[in-house]
Length: 127
Image (cartoon, rainbow, N blue to C red; front, side):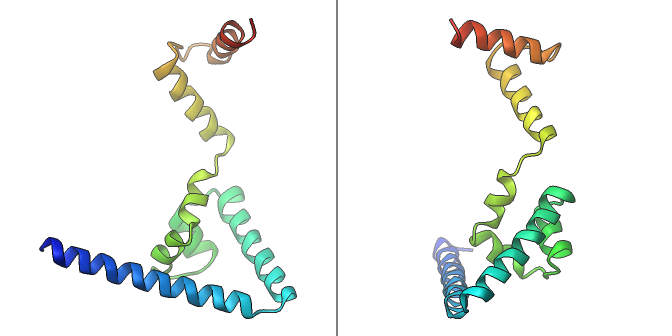
């Protein structure tokens, strides 16, 4: 496939996503306040259920929690949902991220990690 073909496909995709988002925004703006609030709460409840309570994957939330088909993947991603999904950390994931950072960038071992982090912080930042 040539670079021109790839650019054409990319342009078509971007146009389709822009058109979809424009239609979604027009629909949102056409709804009365009370309906927008109800929809917001219905969506928030489902995101909470899928992300926080059930700890589903991006696809799991879209397909199982919301009941969407595969066509939802790209449009939801372009609307920013994947970024929202990826920014949600639970305690285990957050500790793993901190642990990885500490062991890779702070000369801290995994043995008694909390005590070492506390010691590191007090030496570097509380003097």
